[in-house]
Every structure is written in structure tokens, then in C-alpha cells.
Length: 409
Image (cartoon, rainbow, N blue to C red):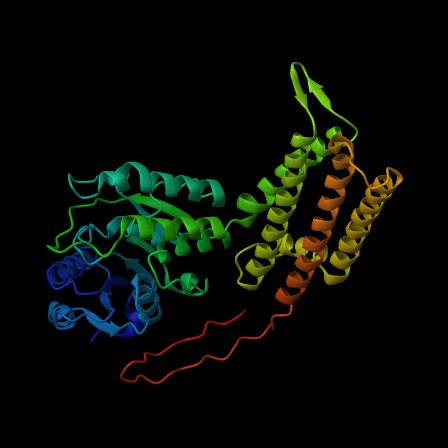
């Protein structure tokens, strides 16, 4: 048996009922490792197969481990933890990826790159290997978002299932997504950590199984999209919110004194309503983004300096002071509006005049409440302990599986 310390590459195959193609994948990977002169292993991380995949993999020469957490990401997380190689190359076990050509991935990893992504568009996609919806819409859109949100200029095939990485470097990222979005999490966290990410060409062949794939186009596509948006609060929340707030303030400032004419267009109180709404929505987006960055610091998702600014801004004392000042300004405006109404005997008033005071006052009150309680939430987020939480292990039973509670650091 090969000494664990001598293993350089682990080829990791997540598995859930892959009896039709698993043996082919294992043998291709072992042959490629031998041709490359690499001491390696094929590791099958089984997710509860009931079709005999485990025995098939072992007979073909693979090492099989059982993944306690269900899902694509759960199988890969378990496999990464159990891998004996310095480098891990992961791929699906459906015989669609080029497991017979591991050389480009191994060369790039040996050159010192932390993560090596496969690019199917550069290597070649066989007819029928990728649905048109994935090829021309889903993958290009999600890849573009990944580049736009995380600066991954070198990554053109964001969701290629075949990729390699330095095992210890990836373990240090604290990956945790159990589903299909694990593919996005690995790349995003590596990018946020400043890892060196490159692409190498690889090919994609038609799925060798007779049954439908585990991937569900709309469900899993949405999970990937949601993950990308949540991991980039500055670009998805803070910046749009700041732009909306500025535009609303300009509109409210211009319309509060009186109507505004822009050529043939007359802007009045109706426009002021929407300007005030823009201010409220914009400030809320910025505050939500700030809270997300504070949370991201706890989970090591954003740079510490960025979150430190929000921690200072959303300190409970600062938020309470700012919120109370806004509430006071809104209350003063409300008192002025009621006094003006009283001078008129509480009779009918011209809405065009009173709303110019009432709307900004109500907006200030709303902002005061939002800012005050955002500071409370921000303070709660910063109270999380700086030491690892204990791991809770539930013993397997008839209806229970082992459950791990991730560290809070």
C-alpha cells in the first residue's frame, strides 16, 4: 500500500448512485496518474448510494469514504477532509469530464497555483454534452457575475466541475456549503482570500448515465446566483443604495421649497413622494450592506478594514445618537406642520404646501427608526465570541445522522 506521505494527487469523485459510470471514471483517473508519473489515489466520497457504487469503486482501485452530510457539497467537503494528497483534483463521476487527461491540472498545481479551474469552452464541448440553456445563458451569465463581483478576470468557466487545488490551502478557507453552490463557494472564498486562480483547457463529453443528472437547472442556478449576490454586499447593496440615496436627496432638496420646472416637464409633490421613498430605500440598502459586511467579517468573507468602517458607523452609541437626531428633526417638522394647520383652524389645507413639510419630516422619522435599530443589530453581530464553538456530534441512529456545527470564527 502506498505510504500516505508519498501521495501527491488525490482525484476526488463525489458519488450518489453512479454505478453505470463510476468504474470507467476510476480507471481513467488511475491510468492518467500513472501516465503522468504521479503517485496518487482516487477517492470516492459516497453520499449514500444504494446501487452498489461503493463496491464497484473499490474493485476498480479507488478508496471509498462515506460522506455524513448529504448533497454535492457535503460529499466534496468530506472528500477534501479525507484526501491524502497534497493536491486534489475533483470531477463528477458521470464520465463527462476528461479524467484521462489530468496532466494540465497537475502541471499548473506544481507551478504553485492555488486553484486550477477547467475551462470547457476553451477545451471543447462535444455535441449534446451541455444543454443550450446552460451553454448560452446560465454559465455565461453566472461567470460574468463572478468576474464582475469578485474580480475573477481569469475565470471564464465559473462552474466547471473539474478543478484542482492545494488541499491545505482550500481546507483553510472553511468551506461549508452542502449543496450545488459549493462550486461557487470554493471559487469565491479563494478569490476573497487572494489565492492564485488560473484556468486550463479541458473537455466535456455527454453524460454517460442513462438516468437524469442530479443537477436541476432553475433550482441550482438560483442557488448559485443567490450565493454570488450574498457574498458581494458592497456591490449589490451598499453602492446601489448610496446612488439611490444621493439621487433621492437631490430630488427632495430641489422639490421641498416648491415646484421645479425642467423644460416642458413640471415636477411637484408627486415627484417629492418618490424622492423621499428613494432616500428611505437607499439608506436601508446601505445599512443592510453594512450589516452583511459585519457578518462577513465574522465568517471571514470580507476584508477586515472594510467591515471595521461599518462597525464604527453602526456602533450602538453612534446609531442611537444619529437616530435620535433624525427623529427630533422629523418631530420638529411634524410639530411645525400641525402648528401651521392650527393657525388655519384645522380646516382644509393646500396639500401642495403641507406635504412639502410633512413628507421630509416623515422621511426623517422613518430613517431615525431604521438607523437606531440597525445599530442595535450591528452591535449584536459584533458580540459573537472570538473562540471556536464546540463541535456537536450526534450519534447515528435509525433516523439521525452525524451533525457538525461549524466554528463561529
